[in-house]
Image 1: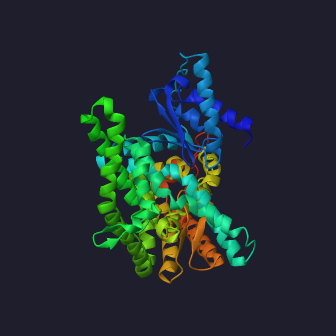
Image 2: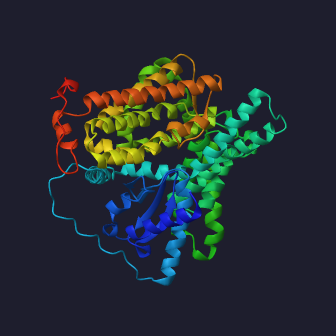
Image 3: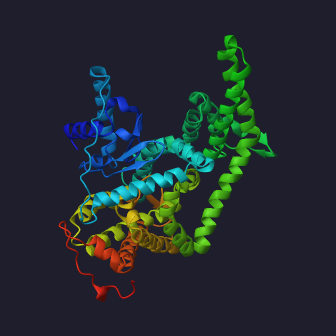
Length: 504
């Protein structure tokens, strides 16, 4: 996308979210522009979803506009620049009120209707997600999400380096690529510590300083619990715990240290006390927890891979709906630290394959619903690349049954990949974030690259096919087909009883 198109996209989005005065913060992740709003009611949701570059919107702790990987990183700076320019020129600017809706008339169920239902379901789920545990998971996710671009970049470079090593090509370049790919992972604990302190209200650099103790080579001279520590022991879990402790120590110091000496005493005590607890407690405990996670993941897939894959692939979409998938982010990162890849992500990615297969079946079953078919056509490319929100909230979830059949497809794909893990062909992703076709460059494992890629591709194919078949034959009742498969003018298509023997 050119600079002009990026600027045009940003310019189209800005008035629809209430103008510059309604935006209090701007950030982005892998696929979404995340903005914090002063007044949610000023957002024109339907107009925003209708923009060609917008793949969907998601409401959480921030208002999230799905633009897709790559695009969002280019549109966000343009959006930030427009907000600053507009504020400088007209501080009091506000969004125009939304045009009143026309009186309801009989019509086909359109994509806009389903998107509105999806938004309502998302809002209801958001209210249910506002529990202390789920809010904690969300904050933990906020620590790791900013690290994903570096994980992806380094993961792809590591894969390229492995390919060159196996082929014996460019031997002089291999050590350089190894250093580039491994540098970030060797210091990831520092970044986790920094982000943890920032997320929980401490001084970020102090969180990073305490977490840096974990990767310092000199810890090898220290004994804790009768064992000699090793650099990196405890990994990201230890860094998270150490930085969180530092936040509480820092806040405790702020309550009693006089302001005159605060700049000297508080940082010193924060690093000293948190560092001692980290060295003589947290590193050992986090190391044991990390080892247990790796051992359990290997055992789970080596002994019950097919069943484990079926459960994980089938339940991942509901986990996303409940917000519980965020608990997997530290586990993925821990597995990547230990073995270089996470075996769980390729299995969980099958949920997206089931979602794509279900959407294609909806497209085929509703030939007269042009509005919904247009939405599916625009969202499918992103779905193939692992961006599932437009299909989930715009198609399958508001329809109900297709969401369930999409989970069936994910379960089948997960069982396929899990079976090969059980047979000894273990592989995973060297980074977290992408799925679908975008995961191919990040795959690594014990077997050759060809076998690994073939198994993952086979899992996607199974997910697509089973998701399609389950949705085509069991995703609709006759009444649903009558209501949904309607011409824009309101003429219902005849139901096809010969194709629906099991439906009532």
